[in-house]
Image (cartoon, rainbow, N blue to C red):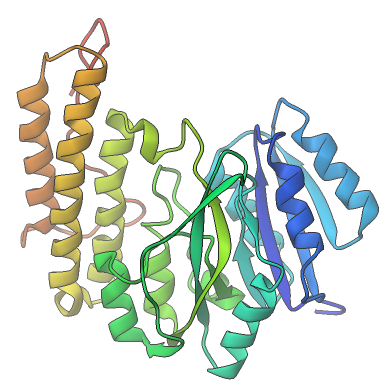
Length: 324
């Protein structure tokens, strides 16, 4: 592709006027220069678009796209379709990055001939005024596909976040992998990309700053998000089944399902307590166990498209119960 940049950075934008300027400025100041930033305005009703437009006028590498609101996955997929770079990075618009974020991740891919790279990160609070280290120690170097994927599925050492990685663009495009329309879409996607990669190059430096906002997905776990946390595991199992590799990673998938079962026990309890509504609490715990067992069952049959879970949780605080 003529004059194609080495890296395409995809930045979905929706209701982030307090943060988007900081995010884009951190990309503008990158020590690595051969990149484009695809700013995907996902129908944001605030001043986010105006801020992004100012960056597009300031630097031609910053390209603004407007689309109807479709959610985070749809915005990322929109960017993937239009990415011209050899590699793709995803940066959330309320976060920001170290000036060597692109240089390091790209350099790792080239040094180790790796189709994915991974960096450590920090948690940012109150618009960057407080930062805390993500407490995982990483070794610099490269790890081959199978052990890297096993650790990523288990959510130990390597997490499934979309944003602290760089991907060979062909992993998305040649394997027809996109982010599904659901919460925890990165859990459903990063391991599928790793499955198709040759190896993962790793950097212990904390190059990404993840803003922990009030109202973030994990901080506001409702019945739909609890459901989608499980569904993300089911998407992964379905993919492994269809590619004939589930038995190879069965223990890892089951370990993740058990982990999310415990996470959901906490989330279900919290939802009922904060809504002071204990109707269907026992039923939600029973549904939680049923879905875990459904995901782990040897009788599961893979499907085309995104698999569905055949039962839903009840949302506390509603006047009428959710229909099953």
